[in-house]
Image (cartoon, rainbow, N blue to C red; front, side, top):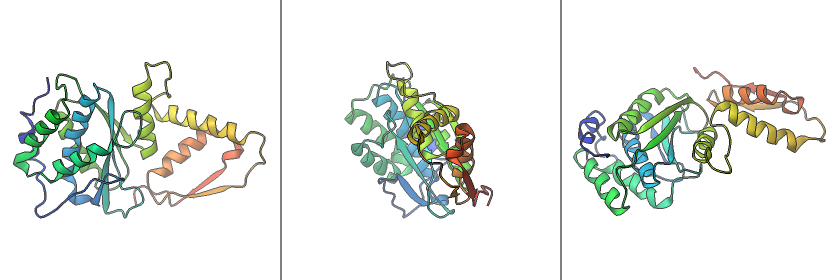
Length: 245
């Protein structure tokens, strides 16, 4: 059974910045990457609790700030069918992100009580990040949050946000009459690559598509997708593709 006995120990490693307020919105949390360590740690805790509230279904956590400046970062939760986090839980995200370091376990306990969560359920969480410089530190904080609640966690590495959403849904439908797909990058490329080929079947062949990847995670992933499609209908040229910049 999950207890909150290890939360204080882990929380001490990721103290909340003073005089800072965080708010979870449509895109999750977003701000300067070096301000987010405590928040991402606490999102790890909440992801585990959310999984337990869904009877052990897989919950996703994505560390990214999409198109924001390189110095920024963010984190968002993905619900079991690959959808956005249930709106009523957004308030819990903000509540735990803004709790004092000493109150984190108390907030978790109050959420568990309010949602009548069975803490004997093993939480399952998958996570990934983009290529931002602050990503590794934030990932380590997330992993501490998951470890504090003994979650079964799987790291999908550096992938795009849509890919993580796809993985979550695929994992949760794997043993159902309607599996969504193979929970891997190859599975993602196959599913959407085949859908693309069906869409363009019989259409005139397009000219080259230039994709500005903004030196981000999209560069290697769209190239991987193009290789899987392997068709003149997806003739692309990726620019600004240096993920080390």
